[in-house]
Length: 330
Image (cartoon, rainbow, N blue to C red):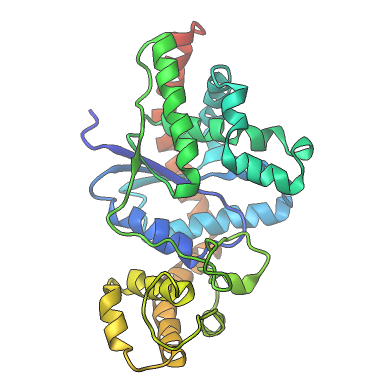
């Protein structure tokens, strides 16, 4: 019998996972392992909404999985798996497609933003349909809670709409999930543009610190990070660059921003960024080391992922079959 609430979350294996992914998501996943029943997925099907180099994608999937485990996600406490290895995700997505409305999907801001860049007529059907697969990911496990950033809030609302609609049409089947706001977590902005969120898919390597960056690269990126006019190391709306760096320092060390501000009172940006570089190196070094060990041992990584997929299937398969029955497909 399920005694704890379920959490489902995942990260796309595209680009290079960053310190933003760690401080904003992975660190929090590790922290909640004893309090919730967790399903953490490498959402590799979602990546296919735009063309991928197969060789690069294979490597990025492995990197993402290795970083999950290296960050401290315990396969004994949490279920970690690849989305594409549990076919029920795609099957449930089709069932949900049949109750989703074109108008609803057309209003998704993320699709409109991405399609606008390349032209809506050339956007893939997968990109348009992305939120339905995302809904299937969560509803398949009857997850109660979904940690999401602001950019995904609209998708979660659609997910809730689809769960309620299915339940109204066919009888109570799915849990209607709620947004999960962790007690702590940083929204890390780009090092070269503090008005934009740090992106693992950015074409500008200097805009992010990748979890697998070597220590010298980390120090260099922090040293070159954009700062504001003036020299005071204080967090304020008119100093977005230094505020971002203070938030990274605070999230990495667990210290309040006010304490860090006091420590650097009267000091310059150079001293602060030098110390921040060491803080970030110290935070990421053990994760990088363990991830590289796992990447050098393909069998261990594959075994961990396959074990997680087996556990995921044991929950996903009955949920899908129940949905079949409700719809008359049994």
